[in-house]
Length: 194
Length: 118
Image (cartoon, rainbow over all chains, first blue to last red; front, side, top):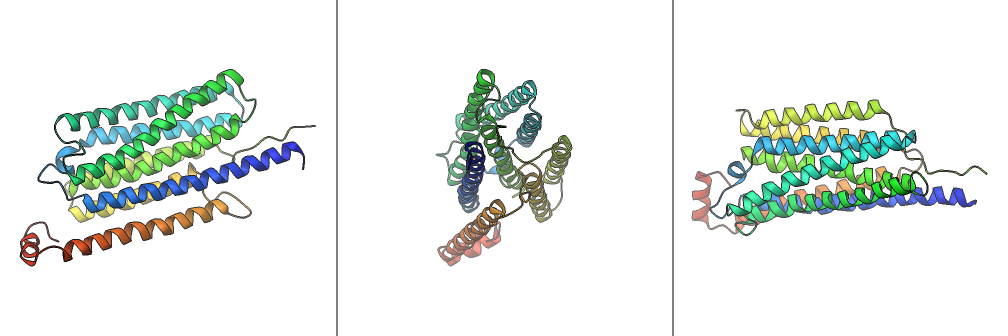
């Protein structure tokens, strides 16, 4: 096989491998959801979801992350037609929205901790912070990854393997929004009525 | 010699715009249901259902699940994950709920049944 064909075959294997990694990450989040489901009612005499969660705030976070996932999709469309400026612009939009999401989430966490409702308060809060915090950590690592990709785009353009890297990044980013759908629905929306 | 380039799946603006608008609508519907005065079980079912629909929409349109031809490795991996996930989550909740019931003294059981139900 020629070197170029081998390169493409290797890239395809990498994409499949990354997809399989995302599937294992789903199992990780599933176990955290199961833990949350079990500890949901263990508020140790303290506040539960109904009292603690700010609904419009959670909705804002959700819409921001959804828009970020959409921007990432638009980046891939621009990548398809090799429009470098558009790719960079959409990547910046994706990362800015992602950073806003993390900022809002950290603000929410800080508020909970300073009012005494930290992860130490109850089993419910422990499981909440671990589940939502793990997702937030994934987003944060994704933001760092995105910044590195941005740097590579600026310094080397479309040379090298940036296409594969951006493909992997976009898979990761879309996956995180899928996980958030369930966090929003099960933790915040269900938490508001249960 | 032309250099072969790695090509990700073909995508179009319409795909993403359509999915984005759909997901936005599903999110707002779910939010509306949860903050309304509908009965609790109705809200749980509606929100849960909408979450599954939105998840499917994002999996199909954003993550291109099912679009591969030839040996469908991605789909196979996804179905395997889904099976494991259901066993893990449903199994854990079932077992822990059962354990909770068995570990609760009978007096407490009757008391709790009068509260939010066991």
